[in-house]
Every structure is written in structure tokens, then in C-alpha cells.
Length: 130
Image (tube, rainbow, N blue to C red; front, side, top):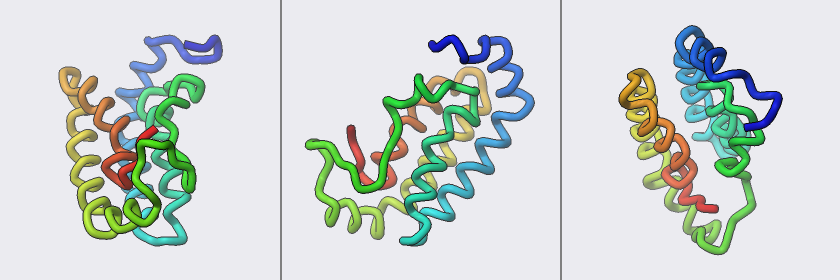
């Protein structure tokens, strides 16, 4: 963890007081904005802020899970396949995935699973893989 990250106590207080509801709002906005072609890049950027909103996880720690529009690794399908997947499956599957992950994050026992689900959200949304 980098030196500018808050302590675990501050992050826990943030999660209990602000993070759980702020993340819900952020994910709702990101999903709704992602439904439009024009808003998809903004929705993707909002998804990148989920770790920071949920637990104040520093951006240096979350760069591994960052997704970018238009950039694909060798293991991701092509843009045409990803676009078709998003239109027919990704938009509704990502909503269901997000809701389940969010509900899991509201409990202490489900928090690790919910965070792992959020890390997989780019793949569910558009088959993006790093």
C-alpha cells in the first residue's frame, strides 16, 4: 500500500459511514450512463472509482483492475464481439452482478466476495480481460 493511503481504521470508518451508500449511487449512475453509446466511456470511468468510493483504496493499488475504453489485451475478444455481447447480455448481466456484489459488500462475511465480484465487473459488462 502506498504512503498516502489512509489507515485501515479510517478506511473501515469510511466504509461504514459513507462507502456503502456512495458506492451504490456510483454504481447506479455508472450502469445507467453505460446504457448509452455516448455515455459508455464515462460509465467505464465511474466503474474504475468503485474501490476508492467503497473503501478509500488508493488508485495505485487499484490500477491492476482499471479498465479503459478502446484498449484490449490479447486475451479479450475483438471489439465487434464485445459490442454484440454488451448489447445482448452485458447490460443486464452487469446489473445483476453489480446488485449481488453490492449486497455482499454490506455484510462483513460477504465483503471479500463482493470486492472480488467488483473486480470481475469489466468482464461481465463487456468481456474485457487484462
